[in-house]
Length: 277
Image (cartoon, rainbow, N blue to C red; front, side, top):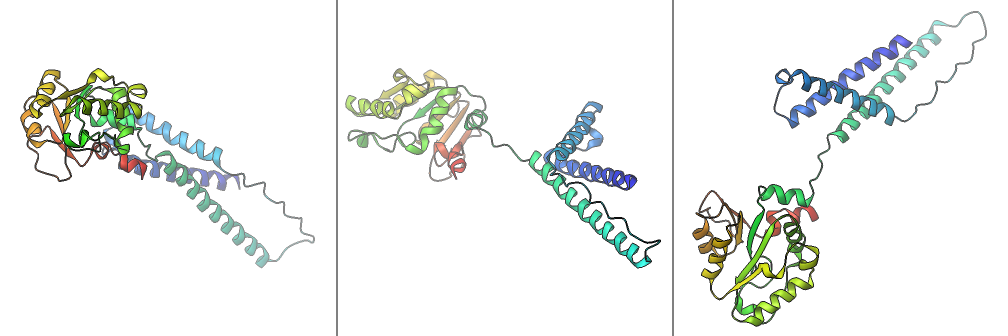
């Protein structure tokens, strides 16, 4: 009986090892033959760790029932055969159940971990630490300077990613305005949503100009790692000078340069809409 149980454990470990190998091969396109001795040791340790975890997570099956002693000198051959068949069926069902539980533990172990928004921001920005960004149509609901004369509203959908960018990057917001009152409306809107208190942005880094060329000049002087804009002309003009650019547009035009990326919105670029789905 002990030998049979030992054999079942050995077979289960082999199956578990094969299943872990399959999972690893899906994650890493490299064969185990190419791994060094240290990597092989790590892999073996992982298999053992998962197996031990599975053993700890197993629900106790309870002790085996003691069969009452039979009275009489002997039992019939058919009764012995029936009990043997029942024992084999029980062993097979238990082995199948154990195998299923082991696979479940391995699947949970290899469950992909969802990155935080901060990690996504750092990855998408390629570790860039200085960012310049247009306000109209990107941060604000308004898309023209004329609309700003009536009021300014920060897009609720962009707030989360904007706060993360201000925590990680040196961010400058800028745009063209027609009068000083428009600039005050923009600053008030940003202050109301907590950009100047929750994030790392200060009012001095919100810049205004009276022309589109003025915004382009700001970007050239600041020399950011990234510039974000909705104006294709400015995107094209700055492509030679800025390391990366993000062109915000509902359409998906041809990329004017390899360092220019396109997205429908700033939040879409960082996958904020996908995370909230």
